[in-house]
Image (cartoon, rainbow, N blue to C red; front, side, top):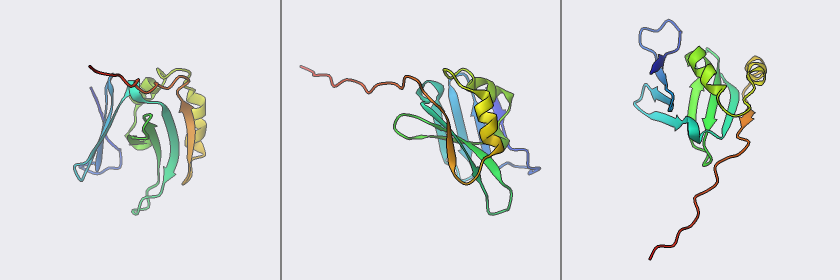
Length: 126
């Protein structure tokens, strides 16, 4: 397991991001948690954020088919996270880099699953 924390010089980061082969988990300072398995990711978005303390950061949003997901600040990523994104089918790192460079308050979709998982069929039980 890889632990990634922002590099803002704070002794205790306000967020922790864990990247594993199974998925991504973000723990917030208030105790809330977001998690998403890699196999459930159907969309990746990139956008900007202007926090109250004046530090801007780019956000990477991983979403599942229900619109639930995990928000990962770029400052909390490392080569392991970016390498894992490359395993998504047809993921384009150049498109991600371009989105990082032009990030603003809106979000840009940088990847969508070419074959999102279909909903489970309705099964009849006896």
